[in-house]
Each structure stands twice: as structure tokens, then as C-alpha cells.
Amino acid sequence: MIRVLVVDDSAVMRAFLGRVVASQPDMELLGASPDPLLAIDRIRRTPPDVITLDVEMPRMNGLDFLRNLMAVRPLPVIMISSLTRQGAETTVRALELGAVDFFPKPSSFDQLEGYAQEIAEKIRAAAGARVVRRRAVAPQLSREAVSGFVPLSQPPAPVGGNRVIGIGASTGGVEALRDLLTNLPANMPPILIAQHMPPGFTETFAKRLDSLCKLRVKQAEDNEVVRTGVAYIAPGGRHLELARRGAGWFLRVTDDPPVNRHRPSVDTLFRSIARAAGSQAVGVMLTGMGGDGAEAMLEMSQNGAYTIAQDEATCVVFGMPRQAIAAGGVREVLPLGEIAGRLESLTRASSN
Image (cartoon, rainbow, N blue to C red; front, side, top):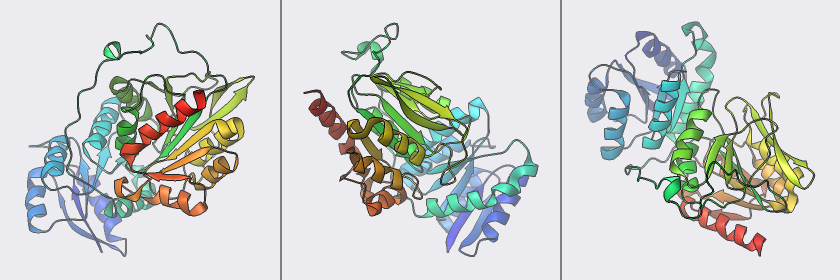
């Protein structure tokens, strides 16, 4: 039985989340607290398996509570986010602090009931998530201080016959992508990323990564020419694809139907990379729930791509890497901390 604690100052959200939990045969509602200080007492008495946490609350905001919780007694936390720019920035920060996942509140409370099953699935995934005590985010060098960085006034050259890297991620992917991308140099081949996120969050996420990385990181745009030294993140709620144009590549951003219930879908991205880049591609499957991308990673491998999956020990949720491995499309399984080095070595090998 998954024991859930709801922490939210909204009586409507407490009632809704309580109904969602109570309606699931494998869940138990431990309580619904209107603020974190009351929640702390409940956690001491009966530790929950999963916490849903609002941000704006009286006496202590959700981020301060989360920071303290993850430093002292790490538990799986799902953030309840608002669909605003400030809400997106706060959500990205919460995921960096150790929140496992988030649920964006719809614009109207009348729409809440339609999200009950999605929230239940997030709670189940969070219950099986790997959480650890969090370290502080290390300060990063500015681009100007990084040797070899191409100034923003001089855009990187379009890609010709070099590598292209595709990355898929879901639950736990925000932190995994930050760890991976901040360890890559500025002169990497182009990187295309499908991170499961709804509209309104990926632009903020891309800007946050861009401020931390030696690479340029941006939200992908339709018909954009693919360039070296740039990581492109699929816009929330839209698919990202790679297409060939002459000797180079460009991006397609579409509103095609969801694949594996996701948009952006890792399957959509990886399949397009397999067909456009073949043996010039590298595929990376990071932490995430479900099996999105597994079949397309097999297609990448069959077309000659080098494929890597994050190992179970360093995943928040091992679902997507596990499914990719089971499908037979993974060539190498690595801890998260070793993937950046492998990508660098593959890049050097392809340029020699």
C-alpha cells in the first residue's frame, strides 16, 4: 500500500488529491495538511511513501520545505505547479532540489477530474523512485570564462557529416539532464532532447540549462538548422524530429498526435534520428517511467547508431532504460556520471 501525504493550502486541491488517492486500491491517504509545518509533524509520526507538495503556502513555502526535507529525510515528492512563468521557474528549481515529478494545475478547477488517472500514475512511479540527500548546485563558470566557447554573436556552424546525439528522458530527467549537459564541452555535436514536459515549462528549463552549461541550450524551433555546440529541447506538448536537408540536418516541430501517450515522444525523436542520421547517431536513454523510446532505440541500433542507457543504480525511475534494454536496442549501460565522458570519446572517435 502506497501511503500518501498531501500538503496544499488549497482546500479544493486537498479534497481532489485526497479523492484520487482514496479511489486507488493500492493507495492510502495518510493526511492532508494545509501547510508544511503541520506536515512535518505528520512525517515524524508516520513517514509517507509519497508527498504531493504545493509551492505557495503559509508559514513556509514549498521550496524551503523541500530543500530541508531532501537534506535531512529524503522522500519522493510530486510538486503541484501553476501554469505561469513564475510557476515554471519554481517547478524547475524544485526538480533540481530533488522533487521526483510535478503536476501542473489546470487553468480551471472544473478540469481537475480529468487528470485523476495521470496523478495516480505519477504517485505510483514516485513510490518506486530512488531519492537521495541533495547536494547544493555547484556554481558554473560563465560562457565567457569557458575556454573555447563560441561567442553568441558568432553562431556555430551548421552540421555536415558529424555525429548527432538524441536523448530521451522522463521522470527524474530534469536533474539527470542537468548533470549530463553541464559536464559536456562547448564543441559537442548537436544534441536533440525529448524530455516529457507539458507546454509552458520547457522554455524555462532550456534557459536554466543554458545558464549552467558550456553548450548553448535552447528550445527547439520548427525548420531550424541543426548546429554544433547546441542542445535543442523539444517544446512541451509538441514533437521534435530530425530531418535531412542536403549534407546537413534541420528540425521539425509538429503537433502530430501523442505517441505512447506522450508529446513530445522519445519514440518520435529517436525514430526520426534513426532514419535521418543512421550510423552517425548516438542515442541516450535516461531515467523515466514507462517504455517510450524503447522500440525506436532498437531502430536506431539496427541502423548503426551507438546506443547507451542509464543504469538502474543512478536512475530515479528505471522504467524507460529497462524497457530499452529489454527490447534489445541498447549497446552499453552506464552510470549517469560516466555518460558525458562516453559521449566525448565517441565524438573524438568520429572526428579522427
